[in-house]
Amino acid sequence: MNRQTLVRYLDEYLKISDIPDKSLNGLQVEGTGRISCAAFAVDACLKTIRAAARRGADILIVHHGLFWSNNELITGVMRDRIALLMAHNMSLYAAHLPLDCHEEVGNNAEMARLLGLTLGDRFANYHGVKIGYLAHLEHAISRGGLARLIEKKLNTKIDTLGFGPAKIKQVGIVSGGAANFAAEARDRGCQAFVTGETSHTAYHLAKEARINVFYAGHYATETVGVKSLARHLRQRFSLDCRFVAAPTGY
Image (cartoon, rainbow, N blue to C red; front, side):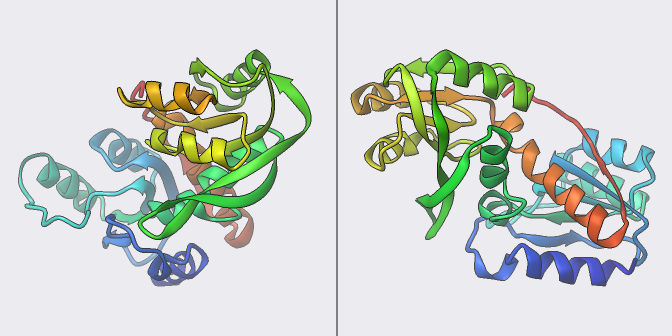
């Protein structure tokens, strides 16, 4: 398919221009005008660019792109990444917050569905956008049961702060580095909060809010959006879509 056709569709479908973000979302590097294979990854790095090239991808679609709101010099690591993209005539497309909060293919909505949760209201205001979801289980589950479910569905190992009730029915979900939203999740009636990574201050916040917090890994919680977007584009355009794994352990 035509590159610009795909880019226009992604821009509209993901509401790129409607969502303020420090990421410069959209087409970040322009490659070939024809797209027959698209690769998907969490991060734009040498490992994912090389893997995409080996798979014959014409475009790499990522959650974490190369260009953010600060001025970037094309030197060192940045130069190497862009040089590799251009050597393979490969485009790079990034969707950061638009892919976190999307109601169909977003990280948080998709994570809720994977865990068998029913989506409720949005919450977790970040840069003026509510990126998270409140969700609920039909039947309450134990703290350990939810931990095992998360590990199974996301293929990850989690850290748990078990400061909340032993039984869980309401869950707040915000992927990535969102530990500071645990107290808001508790205020909204949740017994548990699921996010990616923790921080030093998150411990006391969770303890004082009396909520269970599950840290499932920044990377693991943000694979679900790009995988879901890949499935969507495969179905809509019959496009060859391939996920590229590059876990960081975080």
